[in-house]
Length: 159
Image (tube, rainbow, N blue to C red; front, side, top):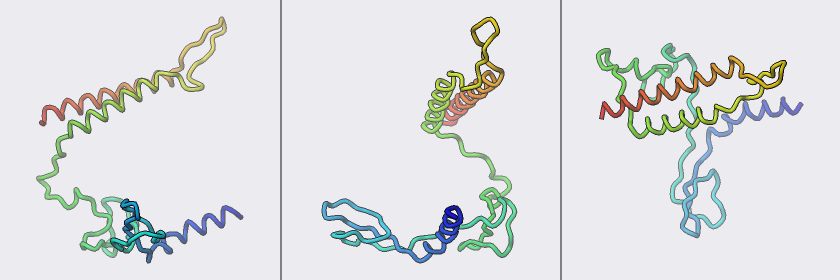
């Protein structure tokens, strides 16, 4: 019964949010707050109607003529479909972003070195050994680090 009520509430939420307002309010201490209701003591600086999230009615790249956005472009149209054929080169990667991605990949490898439950098997004579699943997981993390290093190198060369 609880699941049915929860499903009903989730289904009705987009319908209820359609006409709501969002308020930009300045509080007495000078801070700015965005809320769907005006709190006590707040001064309304701006009032906007809440925008609903667009629904995807078709798969990317396959659009229906009836479903269009405000710009008149079919809703399922991707950016690549709107670009001229000769201008599809990917933008060069950003150095700062690439450095962050490399740091994340290295950290994931460092944290991933510890075997997960089930990745260590006991031996008959005592001791243990790592499973092939552990080895493949570590190999995947090392490939991620290598890919991030290559992307960073490409970003430095593009700069």
